[in-house]
Amino acid sequence: MTEPTENTRAGFVALIGEPNAGKSTLLNRMVGAKVSIVTHKVQTTRARIRGVAIEGDAQIVFVDTPGLFRPRRRLDRAMVAAAWGGAGDADVVLMLIEAHRGLTDGAKAIIESLQDRVGKTPVALVINKIDRVKAEELLALTEEANAAFPFVQTFMISAERGYGCDALKGWLATEMPASPWLYPEDQIADLPMRMIAAEITREKLTLRLHQELPYELTVETEKWEERPDGSARIDQVIYVVRDGHKGIVLGRKGETAKAIGQAARLELEEFMGRKCHLFLQVKVRPNWLEEAERYSEMGLDFKDGNA
Image (cartoon, rainbow, N blue to C red; front, side):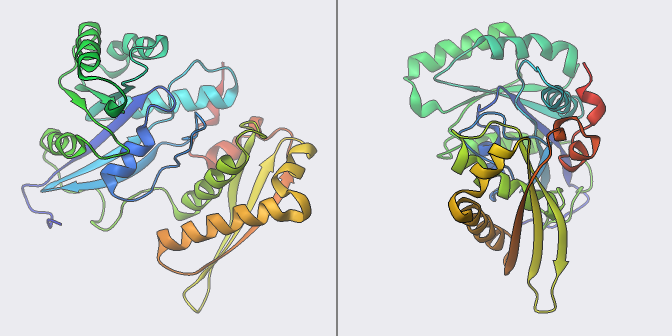
């Protein structure tokens, strides 16, 4: 990697799009490490996760915003406010759409809002999952999208397979303003480790229980203890809204929670490069969706959830 010099560039890139457009996968691809939760369940990114990538003399800070959708609950509204906030603060905005879904009503609604929300910030179109459609369909989609909004560039990629991602990263590096680097070179995400640990456990819960549990669960890292042998003891609480959900998370004789804890611990150890001792508790908290403290833990603003 290049050491920072007086010629360095640094800036923020916001990834926006509908839920499941592949923003988290692209972020992880660009950074080269897993910093954002990726599941097949829509709406899993709750906080604006920043991942940091280096390209030549440029440091690119990616802001992975929650997917933009029509909000119904307080949590939904806070997430949408966070998404537009991330876009408004960026040096470049990337609008992701899925090649095989095309310009859906949701994508069109986001494009219509772009002009008011991002002002003069350059917006590039990124068509993701290009391996799922034919070339002529891609060309038609590119023309349709560019007729709807003056995108400064169009990139065709597969975030999952890596196609086109190097060209996108190279272009972003040239678009970053001249600036000292914003983060130490070895730092890939500015989320505190407590929150990253909670996100990893929440991902394992979502993957394991996606058909049985609704979105009404959250994970908090309650205690983090550095041990003399270099390992970490991490105590987490899984909050659910009703007793029945607690039983689902625990599973028969606690087997489900044990399996989730084991999967989360292994990923945490890989991420941190050291041994972890992870302890999970499940608590029923019927109104956690209305508690300001829970929102702060997720990096969201409780006030943004007001109708």
